[in-house]
Image 1 (cartoon, rainbow, N blue to C red):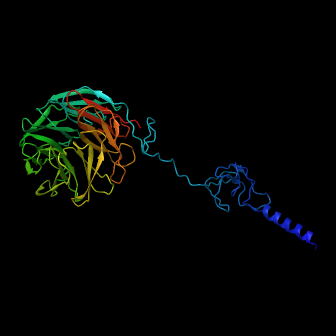
Image 2 (spheres, helix red, strand yellow):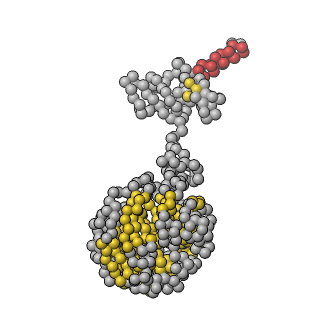
Image 3 (cartoon, rainbow, N blue to C red):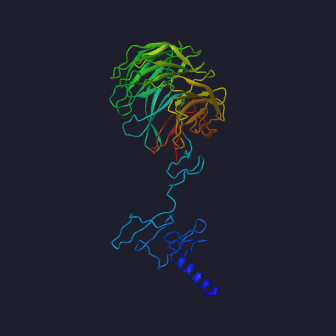
Length: 461
């Protein structure tokens, strides 16, 4: 055999070997298309060629369509037809829709995505001398309503499920009602209200008739100048008990509920803050299943009263948070997602929010962090997930002019981004969060002092 014949035979053998390789289709992909398995060419990641294997090669299927990332054919039975045609699927796994980063536009489409922070233009309602606002369903129509203490009245603004509010009732309450609370105190399924009166030294229980009328009430005599009011199950018996601050005596008083809306004698606990209590919150600080009382004061630092588990509190071993003075407005949530309760307080004179991080053992880490509000005199403070990312955020408003409302987006590690500002009426004194337009996203109601009334921000994802 000559050298020429040997070369020809070698080239022929190589040609036959290549022609029967089922992995080499005739790719028609955009770019350098190469047939992959059944011949769908990919050219630089975007090929769409129709590469078919050579008819002379033996394949396992009657008809194959689709893509396959393996170097050998893999049959699937995901689609069977009467003609015994099999469809293969492959390629990159479906990773779902990409999640937008916080701040990307997406408002108004009705689909909340992580990072959406969307509200309609602020709606305003005329009202004078607002003391406090709460959000609850009180009229029996399954639409969330707004309750307001203003001047010497308790007012109900009925919601229609779209975010619009209509004033429907108003009853007289004793003067200087201050912060009030709502909850079902008599177990009838209707939300009742409790208002304090600093001028008459009483708290009043207003019973809801199921339609938003609160004409029936009972009163309890308190110590000096009750201010903040809290409803929570303090003795773990399934009904709501009552706690209120007596600002004139720097005390916190607790009354236990018998389940029918009748409250027992008050037990008072002294707090050592330099100012009287103005706001009271309940949260399990030491992870024992019983809520502690966290007390904000007009001056001085927040105080924690530890619950023995039966509605009685340790009035001796109180904890005073290592925070600066004058922190009457407090919010509680798990800001760093470690399963323990954290505490945020508005620093009125420092234009920031100070956060203390809980350990779950009844204590807080000594390291405190401050986050700017972008405006002076932050006053009311609430927490909710405003941008749909599963992380608690903070909202606060300005006690001053011009009006501002700032939302600080949580980062999931206990920190917050710079406040995003929205319009609210000046001289904010109270704030509540709830779902007024039934879209599953939190809305905000801000009450302002003087003649500034209510500012309502409705979510618009």
